[in-house]
Image 1: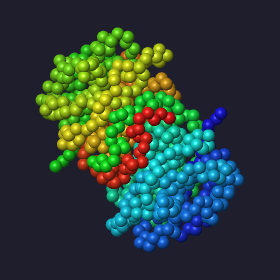
Image 2: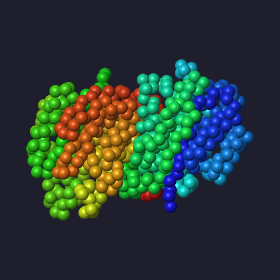
Image 3: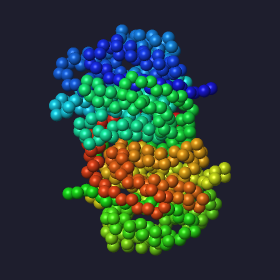
Image 4: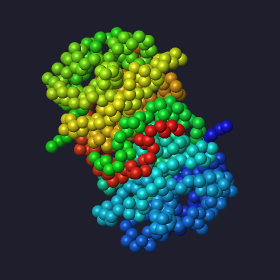
Length: 308
Length: 308
């Protein structure tokens, strides 16, 4: 039986802060329709797809922060997206800011969900590697306050059975960490979905600004190759509220090769046939984990408190 | 105080099986002299630099295998290399097949040593990730019997103080494993020396043969970037006993950029100024391990026996 998933990366242009969620969702539905017209069975949207990338703002009033969060999913704003995807029988994933009550307290996560072709949410992932800082740093031209507005996902990485294979999720900065891909691969993932919002300008080391696209693809391609997995990287791109975000959405094969890549910084669909059986080309050979990994000598990887 | 190490990657052409070690060492001395003439303070030679890459042969007689091993280091064959380097005040590293008595038994390792500018061996590294197979597989055009002729290095990865910084070593297939770089970086490594012998043809998945150079650089560059380290990759290249080995020796900056690359498949020196202080551009920022790593949720990385 074929295990090819025709997969779309649905890159999105900017979501200005004053753009209503209904407008954003209408754009997402248009992208979904384009992808479905090309036969896509899975459509991957970016991190924080419904709103602006608000961690760029220092917002002293928590009510202003909470306006970016979703208290339930689906909700009134996203119901039309769920309905259209279900009608088309298309699976999809997207990221959003999630607030929920957990163990008697309010938790806020940078979250991504995977929804199967019947409209069921089959995976919630909460971002593990939160980048940036937690205090207002006025010297920056824009902030990166993920460590202030979110708490780190406490559940780690796991893949789920879906679409005839095992699918995992990660978000943005997670893709730079080899641990992300390896944890997912060791849980059996054959495809990893990764939305991102990546500013061109990195205030602590601006001398690397010209390397942002290179680092994005290097991370996605190395993660795919070293784990023999499909990796779907999807940007929110373009100039969002004065902040220049990279594009470069890419579908990466288990060999590390980019097989489809976005060519714009706006709403754009790219599609590729992702054969999950191709993972074995890598994972049954050079990266046969059971045969070649050496957890007996990995003494530092999971040790707490190592700081060099 | 400057922490720039002018570093040479001394790529070597093939060592046919009948080439005496004295001839090989004379070539290494010529490369060392070329590097020193360009001001190099450290010269990095490949894996199994003194001999042919003998794991390509099935040798039923252990005496034939042992002919490729060194029982002491330095020894008569390598003493002239040690002497020249000491006279020049140049540090160097190279790989060789090492046999030693340990805990009352004979152990054979795929080993690399680092020798400082005074001629002292300051690091022994024994290859952790042995690729290939342990039984003769006659269907292959050539064997890859590292799992037969060597035992896996039991000591893991560590970096040592040398040349004003912390230097780590890895060998060939180690460079494909993100765990290698991370273990070394968590031990404080600022530069990693990696020799390799990589056949162009990979018998279990020949459809990837055209990707060998890409996979080599992808691994070296991703390892450098994701850990903010210098990575020096050095090939034994060219056609060795009918087996086509890739070249592509490269000096990779902590940004993942290749700053020097070999252009031949033979004996060739490339040189770059490697400023160890540049590691902080990455490791004090986006890959600040203490601030951003999440060992609390890395549940699978070092767990024994996970096979997916």
